[in-house]
Image (cartoon, rainbow, N blue to C red; front, side, top):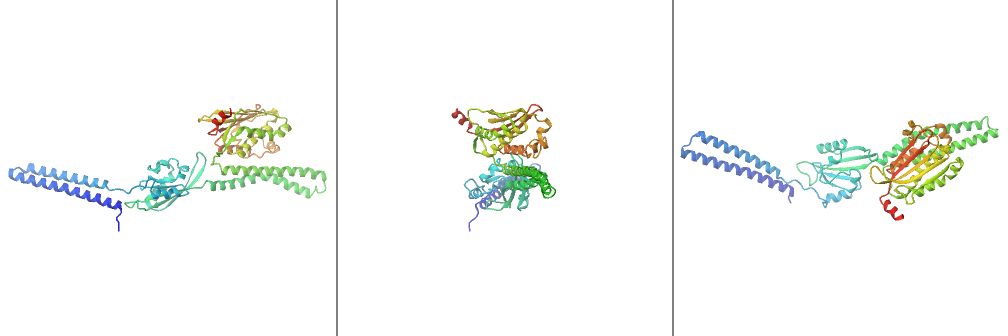
Length: 439
């Protein structure tokens, strides 16, 4: 039967400490006997001998205790696994973010996916320095003290709201000593599940609120057509037109709700596909030319000759500019013109960004409404919005798409001076080089 190297080292250290204490007392005993013999021969007084014996005994006790403490310090602790240890290889192969802590709470091993949850974790450093969430630290402490598994849920608000579940499992391995255990931390991303739950709750609440009015109108017209207006041809045609408009409104509402829910579900995933904004905006303007002619609005665009490439989802960015330009054509039609400008600028946080402004010269928006324009179903004028076919979700969609793309939406307006909607998106990493080549 082979002996564990760690235990063998511990036994050796203890034996060395015991040997050191014995040697100290042996030397002290010899010194005391020598002093007594000299005192007898030289006929020295006890007033000199006794203090000398006490001093030697005290020194022997001090040196013996020091040898014992040094022996305890020299006990070899189990070696922590390095990057080539089988434990590290096992943890690296696990699909979920996983971390192994030693009995002192230091990171022994972790896999690559941990960086998405706790990027500050470093091998060999205390986990408490990187996991500064009280519930997580408390769960680790409980599992370490009790030796029982623990579980905790926690959330992060920056850069986007995310939820996680942490399992803390004590492990007794060949690396453990003195009854202490290692801890295995396993993280599980609950964000998709939570977002689906929120999406379901929000959809039910919003749909029931907004669909109630058109459904009530449809029910009323159906009852009228089945009753008093059964044989009234003119009333039937007029009611059918209104019913068709209400049905289309419900279809738009459901489409916007589903789009908003899909965007919220993927809010924590940033798109990484390079997309040129200039052709997207031109395509949107071409698609809305019919609406512009009907409203008598002239649309102009001022874009740079080089591409404005950002990391994004083409369909979602198209939806952003469709909403902004369509709103300008509908609610700012009295100004008879809409100006769209694309440019690049330096961001406050550093780097360059693409800036797109949509300006109308309509009636403008009062200051008290500006902070709430991106709320779901918030309308400055409910009647006008419904007459224009609005669902109250357009700017909410824009805001959530901007959040997903790590962009910003700003709104500036004064009554009688029109409104300016500005979209700022970080330029793609290789956009500067691409622009120079194009130029």
